[in-house]
Amino acid sequence: EVTGIDQSQRRDKLDRMYRPAALDVPILIARDAPISTLDPNRFGSFNQVAPAAGFESASQSDIDKILSDILTAENGVTTPKVVEDARPAVALVTTRDAWVQVKSASGTVVFEKIMRAGEEYILPQTETAHVLRAGMSGSVYFAVNGELFGPAGTGASVAKNIELSVASLTQEYAPANFQQDQELARMVAQLQFSSFSPKQNDE
Image 1: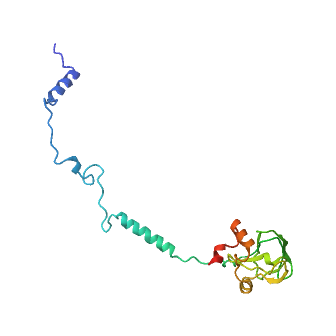
Image 2: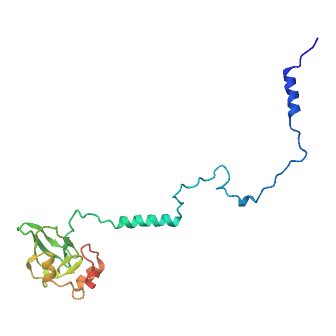
């Protein structure tokens, strides 16, 4: 009786027949150059694609120049003016307790009180100038555009019908002299005012 070769045995014999012979010593192939000299942009799985014709890679200096040009162009753009310039601010400043009354051009009382030493009152901005009446006028000063003018009068006298406009105050009164009024000098040295700066009077 002839017995056929089992298929699994046949495959095993074929595998041994065609299996590569093992080497006693592995074969090593020398590199063409040190690995440090290889250019990853030319070899490997992630080599870079050449730029399209007419386009070159920009250096950092080129990028900085482009950004600078853009910023310069933006800064040079003239923004349309949509609001009027604010009118110059006018304020009352007292170095001693003084009664003051501020009326509108129509005669309406806008502000009236005894202002304390070192107090300031910023006038509301209107189309027409307000009018001042003040006691202790030698202690009442005017702050115009950050500069102090006055005083409104002398000593404890009453000052009347003072037009509180920028043009009138700067024409009728000289800049305040801190050396002549010791109370004013002391007050300015101790307090901080929002309506004027002593440095502006020194210029």
